[in-house]
Each structure stands twice: as structure tokens, then as C-alpha cells.
Image 1 (tube, rainbow, N blue to C red):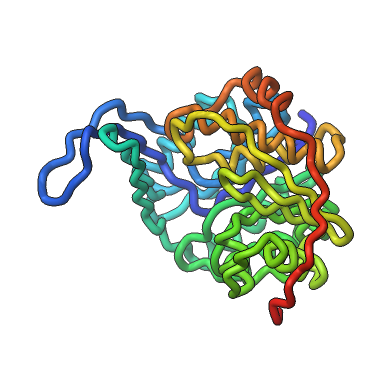
Image 2: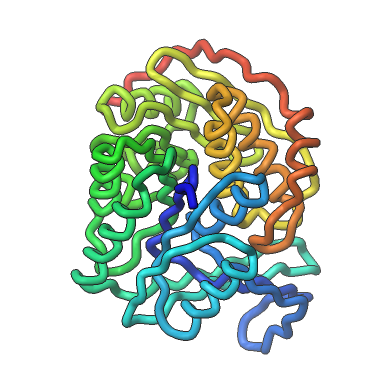
Length: 323
């Protein structure tokens, strides 16, 4: 069997549980209904979405206890090839409640199991073996307790050695400790703010912060997701603004992962960067209209792709942020 084009890495996966409730409030029991269960965590979402888009993909994940076993079972049911590193601790759960009376969404996220030094080393060995022959490695999501903040940098070093392009979507220490080797970085504005330690109020400041990371050699390309405002595509010599497609939202959970999946699938088809990011926006748009972290229909993504406006050039005076 040939190696998958895309390999995703999820160090801290979760069993995503999504329910509806008429009203969420303190003290009283919140009666829930319409429960659904999905294999979640950034990399697993990307793997499921990439497969829905028809791309050859494989997932690397950690899994521990009955919840971890359930997670692997859900991946198998979704026909997503996977390799899991068995943990002594239990895989976490994430809980989302949709409040019907207001349309609000409440998300509860657990920290995950503590990984031992031996388990971390086993993860790196599996990632190294899985990356061999792949075109892209997508590392996405938070790092679990016990894992050093430079762990994603170690993955970047593996990708450099294997000559595989790394796509990274993370936050906090995992993002702040990346120094080199990322092909494409996809932070949200909030994550970019936290990374550079600046409020980044204006578009020019956001572009300046992204260019600062590119100039430092952290990444070659940065796609800043702006939520309902679309995205900024930033390289060393240009910046493009990409507008969103306005649709009613069922759930925003996993939309960023859908964007990553669309971008990487587009690149795996040898599309240009701007076309790939437009595909990412189309995938995120389709994801907004599905419940929980469930997958979308490929036909919907193709339909929304026709509605994504062409990118526009951004000419901005980038403020000196003192970075």
C-alpha cells in the first residue's frame, strides 16, 4: 500500500460529545437530548475532513482507556486509517451544549492525560515512521499535560529530516516555542496575539505580526483565520485578504480544522496557495452547517467554493509592534 499523502498528528485527542438543551443554568439539572459522539481533537478532525474531501490521509494519535478505544472505533467506522500510541492514562472528553432557547453554545474541555517520557518518545518514533513518504504532516491541537512546550518543534525537526512539509495549527506554549521548520502556520487572530504578546487591533498590525514570524524563519506561509471576517494569507512578499461566505451557523466547532483540511487537500492536488486557501474557506463554510464536529458533504464544499470571492491584495502600513 502506498504512503498516504497527508498524515495528521493529534497529541491530545478527545471524544467530542455534543448535546442540545432548552436552557443552561446553575444549580438545576440541565436535561440534554440529541446527543452525538465524534472523534475529536484538531488532527483527527482534519483527518476526517480530508477523507471526506477524497484525499489519501492517515491519522496518528494517542489513545488510552475505554474512551481512547471508543475514539479509535469511531475512526475505524469513518474509514480513517490510523496508528495509535497506547497510553496509561485515559483519553479526555470534550462536551458541547447547544442552548436552544438562545442559540448560544457552551464548550467544556478537559486537560487530557499526563504523558510519560516513554510515551512521548514512542509518539516521536511513530510520527517519524508515519511521515516517511508523506507529502504533508498536519500537527493540530493542544499538547497534553506532561509534554514539553517544544514538542511541536521536535516534530518540525522530524519533518525537515524527512523532507515533508509541516502544517501547524496550535496555540499557547506549543505555538510560542516553534522556532523553525513550519511550512504553513494557521493561527487565529487570538492565537497570533498570544504568540507575539500584542493586541493586534488593526489589519496592518496582524500582517506585521505574521511577517515577523516569517522573517524569523518560523514559517514560510501564515494563514490567519479571522472567523466571520474570512482570512489573511501572508507570505514574505505579499498578503491577500480572503472574504468569507455568509451562511447560517449550526455549530462553529471544528470550522478551523475544516479550513486546515481544505487548504492541505488543495495543496496536495498541486493547487496554488490562494486556490488552496479558498478551498479551506469553502470547507469551513460547509462545516458551519453541520452539528458538533461531524463531517460535511464534499458536494457542499465544491458548491461553496464557487461562492468564495477571489482574494484581494492588501496594501497596508504595517505598524511597528516592537517585536
